[in-house]
Length: 339
Image (cartoon, rainbow, N blue to C red; front, top):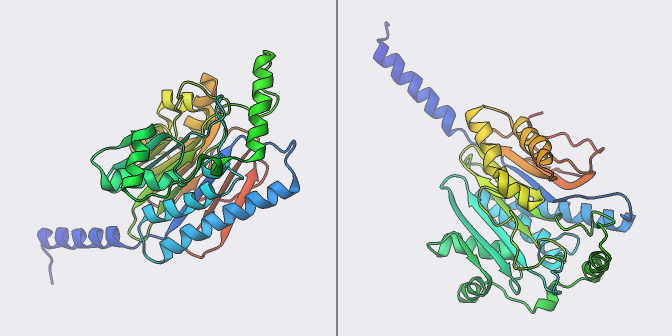
């Protein structure tokens, strides 16, 4: 039977449609912040960090395997990290110059380009959940300070006394930073440095949709209501139908370079892989301006990368097989999906 060009075209279209509709293999990638140093990092702290990363991966994986959207996996993973005092987010947040904890977070749905963000909140137990409420229950993208907390109360988002966020380790880091500031000294270690510490997640669900989220306690000893890149869509967080990114590092530079969006743009227009785009922006361009940090990058075809330019970055990923893969230091080889 001779097929006409029209029939052939129709068959090709059906074939393309079938390929496009093919289910994706769910994937979750997380980070717990760049700037990790071996110096002063105890074996107990390392075990706690690896356990928390593993738990976050498993929680997100449960959501993905239940057929839930990428957004659910991202919020599930980040909530675990916000609740763990190991990381500079939620309960382990650093202190401002005035001895307070100020929390920021953002979330983006790649399929719809909807986003939500909060900054400068003091009583919200899980800022990532409030960011999601801003996205889903309001016409806005970002809320800050008292207004954000009022909205949280209206939405029945769990609020806690500010003392909930206090940890002795973070308090002593502030005291060290204050002493160094008074003496006109540079920070003696990265743990006390102003610009490190964030958690984040990016996910690909079974429908092939992407999402990204980021949460942070900001900078040790910060003043004046300073806000970094984490709650800023395009800087610390970005997701589209092709790419999802969450950053961690010196926020001022991530804002100036629109790091998360820049990575996605290179993937879209230059057809770079997550590793190529991440290396160019995070490993090359950020340090050229004087900054440092890292990111997690995920593409719609299931390729992922964790570029960073510090001694370590808490990071991990989990695929459909449910096996968590976790690493902390730069010399740990973490084979990524798509490599």
